[in-house]
Image 1: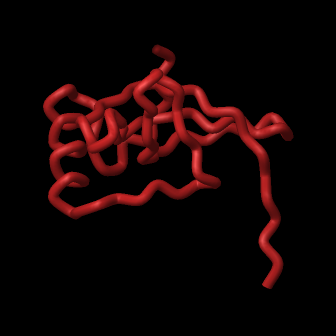
Image 2 (image 1 turned 30 degrees about the horizontal axis):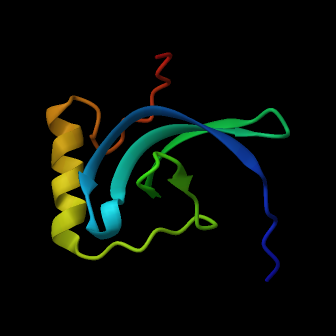
Length: 93
């Protein structure tokens, strides 16, 4: 089955992070995906940030070392008021 790839630019609406080895941070982000055809979708992603502050995209994948870290990031997002299941409303911030 062929998968059609769409390229998108990503606007980060909200983000939380935790420190990882090698001075990296693992981020959990609420984003708007802006597709080349004019379409837009909101969604969550995990992504690493390098020590210099640059994001480290990995073709849609980030290695998540444990479920505990996932839960920690999601709980931080919930406490900040944005990490809830089903929160697919547009956020104009």
